[in-house]
Image (cartoon, rainbow, N blue to C red; front, side, top):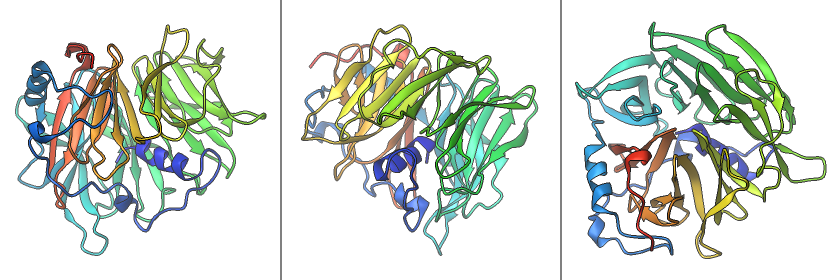
Length: 385
């Protein structure tokens, strides 16, 4: 379960600055639809933008298959490096009988050549701990661990150095009934947001080499993302609504909000990777995107009042989401053509980085995962519908 999905739940329930009402189990909130996918040929068209999956994409799906079955359990992919060559996941060794939650023994890294997984981090409480974020910048894996099945407010942030194999804890919750929303890392810098009072959130920039943490921003802030060489976050304005703010990643110093982000609509959910920022506006119907260099955001998907969408992600020219319906199908939209394609019939989720997109289909109550990785830069544009 990624931090972005937790953030989506927070915004869905109450928006910036309030405390969500947790369900009985954090794990159960994000449990997958318990059905296996049928043949793609049996899927009917669902959205106005939908086109058939091109043969070249079908080939990339097959070639990008991720082996998730091990002799000790199943691996749930949780994060991917910028070019798709490095993949991380949680090793699930069973189901806790008392809670129904998975037993996450450790965080692991995939060796694509050997098709085997090696340990990165052992969970302290495998029957409760869950990884909720884990970007990898080529050297550092910065990940958050959720420690409770009943609350979103018990977490810690860790940094694993792939050059030494050592892990250290770099932050934890402040005991406030607010949640960690996002962790990002690039070029040895990590960024996350943390509630320090019930109404105030701080944005942190952490230098992984010097171990120095600085406060970039403080206020009624939802989260913060790394976009190119910027840290960007939405902040509630005194006149109501949200305003994007920005700081330089290399220094943490405030900079002028990029052109095109000074005026946005009602934001429900945000995702970022590489030089792109994407979000859902309004009543979970419209996806908008902005890239560094664009004069203004562009509407990528708008299904009108008939179809609601959730769980936005972005990588390169591709944006993913799932529909809020009985099936919760995973879709990918192509900013180059305006078309979209369905990548699962029922259920699933996506994890992204600068030029990699993992699509995960949880296929049964025992959480056996069918997964594959795509490289957006190597995919031909979807045909126009």
